[in-house]
View 1: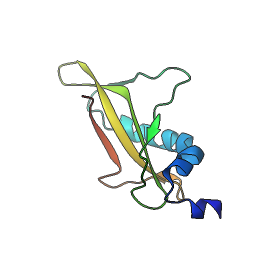
View 2: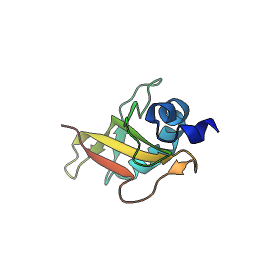
View 3: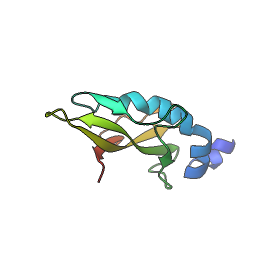
View 4: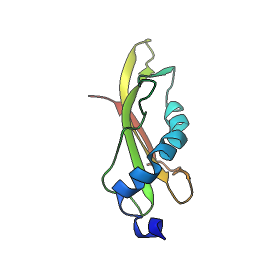
Length: 106
């Protein structure tokens, strides 16, 4: 019942589901690399340290981070920012063209 009352409360969703979202989203972010990738977070650090403060739909938590480097065609590694939509009710990544985004960090 508490979850149903807070489906559009991003802070509540983050407090309850950020870890689950990070675990589910990690392989989806990694698959975006054309070549190799390297996580830059520390041992006790999280790969998705922040979240969007507004939900894109009820029950959808968008987690964010910039702790990965992707290798380009020339072998150089570039820090990337990424986001992933996680459906807290279905307990899975929202798989559509807008659920996962990775771009160079400015």
